[in-house]
Amino acid sequence: MPFVQSAYVAPWLLRNGHVQTIYPAVCRRIDGVRYRRERLELTDGDFVDLDWSRIGGRSAVVISHGLEGSSQGIYVKGMVRAFNRRGWDAAALNFRGCSGEPNRLARFYHSGASEDLWHAVRHVASRGYERVALIGFSLGGNVTLKLLGELGESVPAWLTGGVGISVPCDLKSSAEAMARPINRPYMRRFLIDLRSKLRAKQARFPRELNDSGYESLRSFRDFDDRYTAPLHGFRDAEDYWARCSSRFFLDTIRCRTLLLNAADDPFLAPECFPGELAERHEWVHLEAPRHGGHVGFVGKGLEVDEYFSERRALEFLAADAATLPTRNSSPTIRYGATAR
Image (cartoon, rainbow, N blue to C red):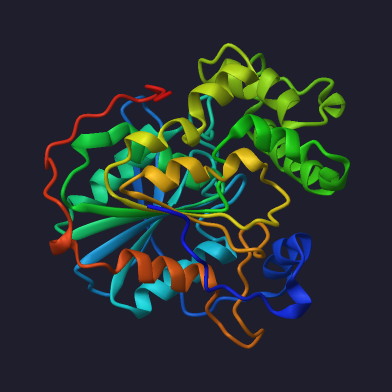
């Protein structure tokens, strides 16, 4: 499937990646989304929280947030509201430690934590929906695409599609992009938020989560070398990035999947736009509008209360499941089986 010609036209005042990235976080408000929380116990003794917005739909969408986000994120609530309006139930996953309460183990969430997403997806499917679809933003988009690639040929028939929005599908090049001087304000904000997570559990895990000298950290490489890799079984940041980048799992995806990445996204590098793969892939669609920033895609006019990414995800996932090829309903999955 070749590149998708995008219909997105950004408002002329927002034809800048940084403005598109910042504007929704500062100016957008979402009304009408009311969650009901459900706690899911994990097999390792930890938990994740799922926030439901049900309207009695026959289909459900599972939405995953980005780094240091949650189900309360404006972009998550915007997507929940858009799908509820069209008759879908929505379940917003909070990754470990992101629901307002520290998780129980020393480990946290990370860009490759597809086993936690799969646990939530199976739980949602057990509620008897005719079909389930996945949407992930940024880090959550990487986890979503990685999971679909791990499922491969054994993706269940009820899992009919996925959408990744503003996905750093090549983690190494994205980390390097974030280390550029122009992105220092974003990087500083992420490091401050991540330190708060460490400190919330420091008393219980003083050795693993020691933040002495934290001020010297300047980049995701620094943070991932010191924390992400050792906490989650990787050798170092390079090993973590290589084993968890969804770019290396795209080739084995076997359900309709859309990757929506803006060309002016300040967080992404060229490696996050897998054009050659999309041109030969039966299932993966790549859409790369000129503008949109990182998790932006503000509506065509500033008065529009649904953003392009929401309308596009709806359009893509609303395809009739009956027209799709028959697939295995009893999936097997190998986590971290890098498909390179």
